[in-house]
Image (cartoon, rainbow, N blue to C red; front, top):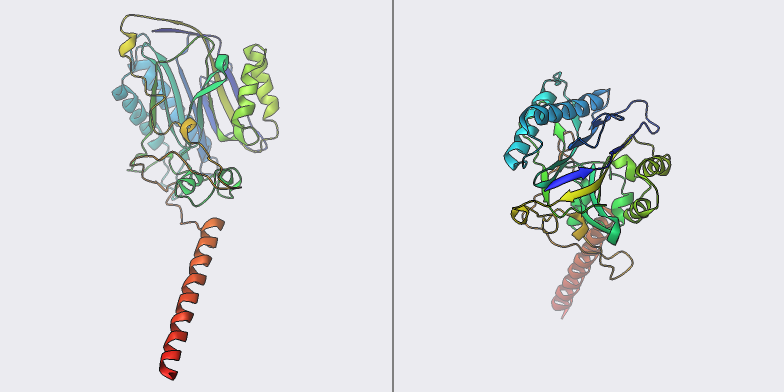
Length: 338
């Protein structure tokens, strides 16, 4: 398939931070309808190390795609993995030996003859919207501590939004580490004219939910007006916040399109398929996943967390145990006296 894009729209805001740790590719103002690669990284690590990590990964991915990927061919998973390793090389070159390593999230969109490949590490988000039917077709699953707690049943769906450790992530690209975090990759071939793709850092979503994002996209505005509206919607965000909005203008079918990889609706980490089912005020469940081990590394292993729900369950079991012990003691005393 051949995909034509409208001019992509970038948001790159400082928020109420002293420095900008988000990096985007292409740089703000540089994107054209001919671009096919879009990258967003949200750095972390403090002491001006976050922006070093995010810019290094953006630069490394862009360098690989520029020299080793042909725009008119299908992007293979092998090429994508090689691009990630190339970005890690750029990141490792920035390692200064400090104990606290620089790190970053990574989100990537690449449009090619096979459709669109989306990949991410961390909690920066990827969306695929179809405003014509008011659908979110794909929403990346955050690699975050709160999601792991939610999966384990320790907190509720709504508690994820307000949990005091909601900003801690369970996967990141970290300089100078031998263990490379894997990326979640989705292949998208169901692409129609009018579809939107959005990649954004978590700062964009501080005060915006999915329904508000859909309302924003279906509004009768041109894409630049949508960009300005997103800047307005996120002006209360304390964190750096960045985004790329990519609007599909046309899709030209080609022979062999029916064989293209398309796992958008079946991949287990599509968060569209994670549904809160309310049985009581805060009672939820999720669609189960298979063999998805929890990885607890933000910039090192995260300590175990006991949530309010876990504390209540523990208290109940202590009370039950104490009552059982008391009953046993009373029976033994009665037996002895009689």
